[in-house]
Image (cartoon, rainbow, N blue to C red; front, side, top):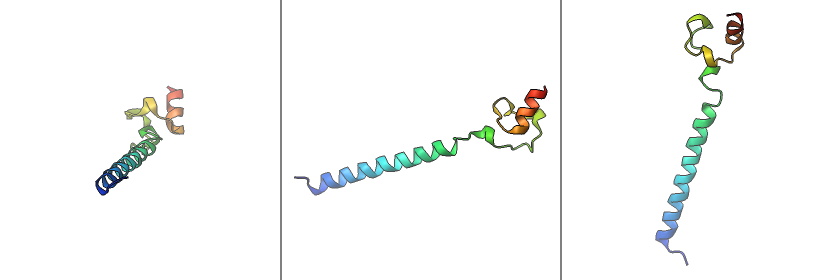
Length: 66
């Protein structure tokens, strides 16, 4: 039979594991598109640091025209 202390300990472990899963899932999904999916340089590809990994149409066209 489970006592109160074990019940609270198991509940806390479950809550901690669940919150860890939610936080890690949120961080993974937030970065799914990656930074290369955002353009902080107003589509001026010439001096962009993210150009190597850029998947935006403007970046792809600029890389192909080089």
